[in-house]
Amino acid sequence: MIGIFDSGIGGLTVVKAITERIPGYDIIYFGDTARTPYGNKSPETVIEYAVQDTTFLLNNGAKIIVMACNTASSVAFDIIEKRFDAPVFEVITPAAELALESSRKMAIGVIGTRATVKSGIYEKKIKALNPGARIYSVACPLLVPLVEEGWIDRPETAMIVKKYLHPLKVRQIDTLILGCTHYPLLKHVIQRKIGKRINIIDSSTGVAGKVEKFLKERPDIDSLLSKNGKTRIFVSDVTDQFAKTARVTLKQNVLLEHVKI
Image (cartoon, rainbow, N blue to C red; front, side):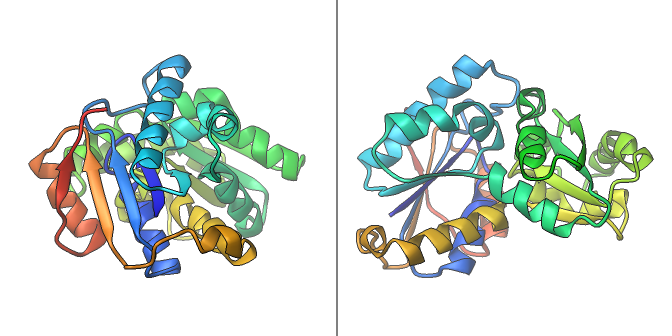
């Protein structure tokens, strides 16, 4: 199975991207809804959570791990990769690469949680690939709770998105990285507020491409993965809103399995 974890519901955008890109693979997903969001936690706490999440997925049959959480990817990836004997993927590098391919002026905006923005990980990744690129980052701490609450199309959410994006519009960026896997659920709002000419980079599609490429190049790993087209969704706290948003995101009925980590 392909194991995927996130702080909450946002990682289901990665589940969706992977099932569309490489259909048929069994997936096990863990959403840490009892402890979401990760973005306002200390790096030490996020690392602890990421280790627990990864351990759960591997103990339940995952053969590869996708860290669908940008916050966890930004502060815990190196530790997870070293500690566990399984291929591990993060969502930041693929998004950085896609942004550089997309940007014409090398003026790239990033929105993410406080922890992701504070880490400076997108700046480091992009600058390593293209030192001449200009990167402008804005923390958007209210967006994850709004998505988890299901306030996708509320006018209040649109107002908050507009407020967050204003500094990036002033910088005249031409590409915007959604530096949190919750944010694609607000993509229509973000596109409307940032402007239709701005290229929006969704990290979920980027990591799906990385997983596809890896499995083509590593048939030894690919052969370990079950391919019955089944997706199991585990959460640390069951909520009606999670179930509703999951159905909309995956476009199918879902069974949420409650587990304590």
